[in-house]
Amino acid sequence: MLGRGIFLKNHFPIELSVANKEPIKPQIVATKTVARTRLFRIETVDLCFANGVETRYERLRSGRHGAVLIVPLLDRETVLLIREYAVGTERYELALPKGRVETGETLFAAANRELMEEVGYGASRLTYLTSLTVAPGYIEHTTHIIVAEKLYEERRPGDEPEEIGVMPWRLAELPALLAREDCTEARSIAALFMVKEKLSL
Amino acid sequence: MLGRGIFLKNHFPIELSVANKEPIKPQIVATKTVARTRLFRIETVDLCFANGVETRYERLRSGRHGAVLIVPLLDRETVLLIREYAVGTERYELALPKGRVETGETLFAAANRELMEEVGYGASRLTYLTSLTVAPGYIEHTTHIIVAEKLYEERRPGDEPEEIGVMPWRLAELPALLAREDCTEARSIAALFMVKEKLSL
Image 1 (cartoon, rainbow over the protein chains, first blue to last red):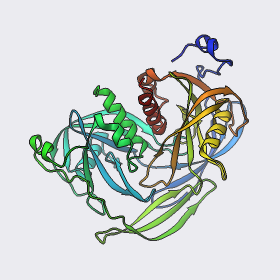
Image 2: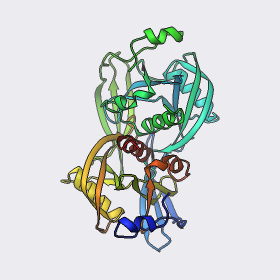
Image 3: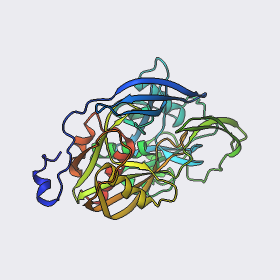
Image 4: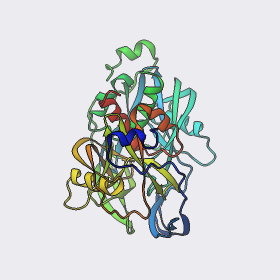
């Protein structure tokens, strides 16, 4: 983090409102479910900010235990990606395997189950990397990133409507992956960069 | 991308179903809006896959023109982050500025407007970097990443309920940023890595 202005003032005209002091969280005055479908629940949230401003927001609740996204390392240099149809964007997307954490499941158990269902491997070593959000301004959802190593062959049946394509990719060739039109999913891209940096590739 | 198996077979027991051949997209049989609120529209989509399997999915439509996420470079080494309350996760998040593209607006006009509203700067140079999705499996939404350089002071009023904190951060100190609990938004993290790599920092 930069210092509080001295460096900046020397070469830039205005002082930035550096966000160093801890902000006071707004109060939730009321929440109300306004729509519910099989997969989604939408809520209005009435907030009162520290400055007295009151605003109504909408947010998507997941009502579940979050999700895991797995970085399966075939070896120290190679990650396994999957290609799966994404109905949100109506195209096949190349990304890391992921899925919901079921009730009663640990993050590692969920990661290993999804790995077996989507990629056809289990992992003897699972490591928690970080947790990411997709759009914290209006979605509750959190995804836990799990690195999977020491892979062994084991396939479990999932609920996928068609066979998932698995594609090994060298982490050193991340720029070529990002240049593809079918690799757009932000959590996967962030996780790949983090793992690449961690492994100093 | 790795070759088709020779390399892998030498040190791994099973052949991966390498997803090299172009998949056949499922057909959309029917779509139906099942919930609509001020911000969200949820749709069911009935799909028929190439193998004959029929499935019903739900997805979130944005019904808008996508969003922009701006990487404002104060200088070649320093990015400007904002800290804003996120009602989805109920905490302040440190991330890059972003916002919706309004009807009739170009991506660059939207990026510069959001930059002026949220950070208090305009940019003389705007460059398109890439487009990211947040959860393509069930959200239509696409975010276009715009790099903003040659900044000048200009603030425009936005619709924010309280003043947004602005925090300069050196790209070289990205690991320290990722170690913070309030920096979790995947699109911002992916964009910061990409810009850092592009600038060879």
